[in-house]
Amino acid sequence: MFGMQNKTTEQEKSTRLKKLWADPSLRKKTVALFLIVMAALLIYPKLAPVINQISLIGAEDPEPKPTPVQATIVTESQVSDEIRANGTIRALQNINLSSEGSGIVTGIYFEEGSEVERGDLLVKINDTELQAELRRAEFSLQLMRETEKRQQQLFEGGGVSQEEYDAVLNQLNILESEVDLIQSQIDKTEIRAPFDGRVGLRYVDEGSYISPNTQIATLQNMSQMNIDFSVPERYAPRVNPGNQVSFTIQGVDSTFAGEVYAVEPRIDTRTRTLQIRARTDNENGMLRPGGFADINLTLGSFDNTLLVPSIALIPRSRSYSVLVYSGGVAEERPVETGVRTSNMVQISSGLAPGDTVLTTGLLQVQPGMPVELTQIEMPANPDYRAIQ
Image 1 (tube, rainbow, N blue to C red):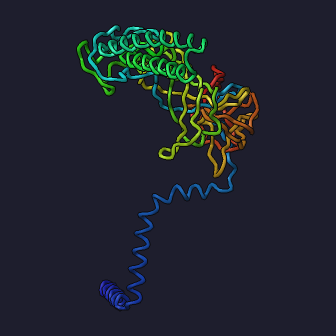
Image 2: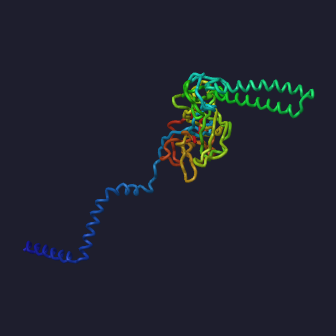
Image 3: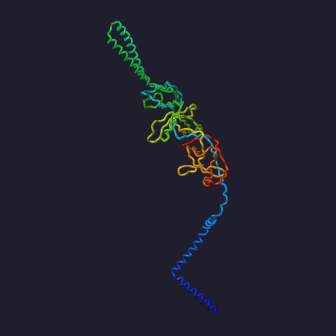
C-alpha cells in the first residue's frame, strides 16, 4: 500500500515537471540560469586575485621597502660644442704641369716624386727656330743701335732733322720689341716650377710631342694642407674664421688639429650647406691630398657646465625632468637642457653642483618613493665634447 503511494507521488512529480517544462518562458529561464552558473564556474579562477585585492581595500598598507637604484653626482665640467662633418684633404698649392706651346720635348730635368724649388727648370721643348730668330733680331737691333747713336750726334750738330732722327729711334724701339717677343716665346718652351713643392708621376718622355692639353706631371705644395668640408646652413651664423677643428684620417691613429681660415659667403642652393676651408700644418708628411677626413668643428666651449648622463632624463610633453635623491626619497625636478655629448647632456637650469641624480630604476620609482643608493658614480673626466 505504501509502495503504491510512493509510486503515485513520483508520477505526480513527473507530471508536474513535464507541465512546467512545457511552459516556454520557464524553459528559457531555466536554460539561462544554467548558462550563468557554468560561466561563473569558468570565470571564477581568473577573478579570484581581483576579488582578493578588493577585499584588501581599506586595510592598512604595510610600509614600502626602498627601491634599490644607482645615481651620479652632478659636478661642474667643461664641454665643447662641436659639429661632425666629412671633408677632403687638399694641398696648399696644386697644379697640373703643362706647356703654353706645342713642340718636341728635348729635356726632362726632374725625378718623379722629388722635391723642387720655385724657378727650377723641369721640362724643355725644342726652340731651335726661335733661337735662330732671336739671333737675327739681336743682330738687327745691334746695328740699329749704332745707327741711332750716329743719328743722335748728327741731330745734335744740326746735320739731320728731328723727323729723321725720330724715324730711326722708332725702328730701334720696334727691333727691341721683336727681341722681347722672341725671348718670351723661348721662355714658353721652358716649364719651370712656379712654387716649392713635390712633383708627381710624369706622363711624357724625351722626344714626345706635347701641346697645351698634354699633362706633364703634377706639382703640389704639401707643407700645409687645406681641409674642405661643409655644414648645414643652420650653423652658418656660428662658423667664423678662427674656429678650431680636429680630424682623423684612415690608416692613422693620430688626431690632427687645424683652424678655419675661410668660409664661403653664400649657401649652396643645391645642398643647403655652407662650404668651409680649414688649414693645418703637415710637417711630418702624413697628410696626402685627396684623403678623407672625419672632422669635428668646434663652435664654442662652456666652462663650469653641469652635465648629467642622458639616461637620467625623463621626457615630458615639452620638457625634461630628473629624479634627485633627497633625504632617502626620490624628488622630481624639471630641468632645461643644452648641448649634448655622446652620452651626456648639459643642464642649464634645475640642478646645482653636488646634487645626486638617479640613473637607474626610473620606470619603477615615482616622486616621493623611498629609494636606496646601491652605487654612486662621479665623472672622472671633466672635459666633454658635444657632437651635433
